[in-house]
Image (cartoon, rainbow, N blue to C red):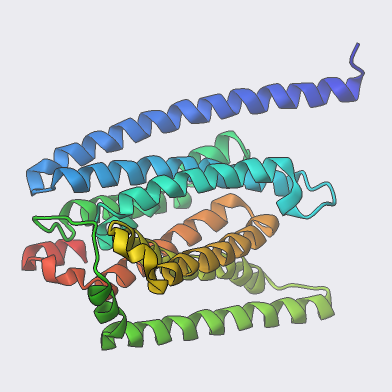
Length: 325
C-alpha cells in the first residue's frame, strides 16, 4: 500500500498526465485551425511551397514549445545535478530539436521575414502549457498581449514578401554577396554591440544584487526580460545561418566547400548559446514571463535579419509593405 506521501505524489503524477493530455488536445485544435488559415492564404497569392513551409513551421513551433515546457519542469524538480544531465530536461531538449528540424525544413521553403513571424504563434502553446501543465497564472494583460502579437503575426504572414518563385538553392557567389553587403555588416555590428551591452548589464546587476542580498523590483524585471531578450537576438543569427546552410546544401558541390561547414558552425554555436541563456531564464522565472519575451525578440530580429541579409524587401509591393509593418 502507498503511504500518505506516496499517495500525494501519485495523485500529482495523475494530474500532470491529465493536464498534459488536455494541453495537447487544445494545442492540436489551435494548430489545425491555424493551418486552415494558412491555406486560406491562397487568396493573397501565397504559393504552395510557402504554405507548406509555414505549416511545417507551425507544427515545429508547437513541438519545441512542449520541449521548453519539459525543460521548465526539470528546473522545478532540480535534484542537485546540472540541468543538462536530468532525464526530463534531455527529453525536453529532444522535442526542442525535433521541432527545430521541422522549422529548418520550413525555413528553406519560406522567406525568412515571413517565417520568423510564426514564432509568436508559439505564445498560444506557451499560454496553454503554462496554465494547464505548469499551473502558472494567466492574467488579462498576458492574454490581451498574446492576442495582439498573434494578430500582427498573421498579417505579417499573409502580407509579407511572397516571391512568385521560391527556390531553396543559394549559390556560394550569392551568399558571399549577401555577407559583404554594407547593410548587413552594419546590422551585424549593431546587433553584436546590443547583445554585448545587455549581457554585461545583466552580469553587473547580478553581481551587485549578490553583494547586497537584496534585489529591487526593477532589477528582477530586467533580469527576467534580459536573458530571453539576448537569447532571441542570438537565435535570430541561427535562422540566417540555417537558411544559408539549407540553400547551399541543396547543391551537392557545396559539400566540398569550407564555407558550407562554416554555415553549420554558425547554426550550432549561436543555437547552443541561445539554449543556455533561455534555460538561465527558465531556471529563475516563470515560463509565462520568459517565453513571450524570447518569442518577440526572436521574431523581431529574425524578421530584420531576413529582410536585410536575404534582401527580401525587393519582393514587397507598397501595399504589402504598409500592412507588414
